[in-house]
Image (tube, rainbow, N blue to C red; front, top):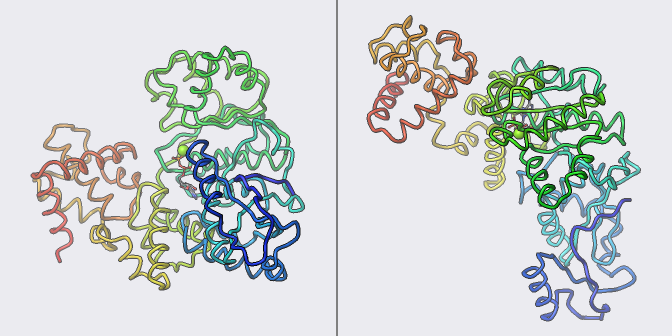
Length: 492
Ligand code: ADP
Ligand code: MG
């Protein structure tokens, strides 16, 4: 087992018959001061040297105890609960510390970052004692211990793997190229540049590549960071006179992964440094993987020589998922979290949340939390209730054609005008309203909506949506028009 130290446990006094295991006043004071002054979480343990009686009582069935703990965690924190929590086991219960064995480093890291306090709470509830939790890596289960001591060890999200990534027409190319790179870093697409709007899976794919690369070559040296972090570390290196260290740290890795490179925009000195980093890694035939929220050429205020390098390998775009892909994603996310939802609910969520996959997950969480709070199973009625008000605006049965009919009648324009390239306000506004309503009232993807309106791309539809959404909130006249249109499209 590799030990981790999530918090500071102190043993303060010897167990005495009849003495409470709650902290004494002095101990409480010490805990408070440590927290306030040093941000340190201190817990006091009653020193026994041998197992406490209650530990002995529980020790014979830690499996059953742990099932109760996980159940409580599930109820307290559905957002972070995962199906694989069922695979966690108790490694040891001793001196007030419950060691939980995790299948790998990423899982242990995830738990430590997100779930320490909820597990502690649940364990204290289940045992009735002041238990502390420690997550340890179960090396017997195939962990990669070398990474734990690697100073540049990458914190990979255990959820973000290729297995949990749903492939559809919107992301097929990006997914396939990431798989290719993960099998043979430095030898296929270099650099690999993945771009797409927020919440479409860029970061997920980056983690998945790193998981894959690591699986094949556990001691491969990966630097994986956001562009913002790269810039910050560069600035700190300059300030502290540690530029040479910074450069050797980045220029000698096997795989450099930088998320959201659009952050380089307008940062000239960082661009210069990044340019040399890129060249060094590329010339060493090592792998570079980058993401951005737009295509290389669309990143504002960035040097031409960087743009051209970004395009040297493969540039893959992520689009918003279609309805079918969204249903599959919801189902996969539910399985991953051990949530039981039927097809009907998955379809309902996918029909309601359209542009962003992160929001799909959010909707699933709200539904799950509502069901937990009500003590009811998840069904369509509960899902509708949970997702609330907006439900009225997204319903089966409205087609884009119906929307276009209503809009052309309302604004007295022709479909041909909407599909044309004309940009006059009298045409642009109805066109944007069409896009807004289609996104709100139908299950079509941004591409599909753009396709109905003269083959416009997803970013145009997204822009239109944002604009009308803003107007609807700020301009009473537009709000009135949209309300009338919705009433006309769906009389009720
Ligand atoms: P981005 O980096 O593009 O903003 P993320 O990678 O953070 O987006 O993805 C947002 C959320 O959506 C994550 O929880 C991720 O797991 C999920 N997600 C995105 N695309 C997919 C997909 N194709 N299959 C499963 N989950 C996905
Ligand atoms: Mg991201």
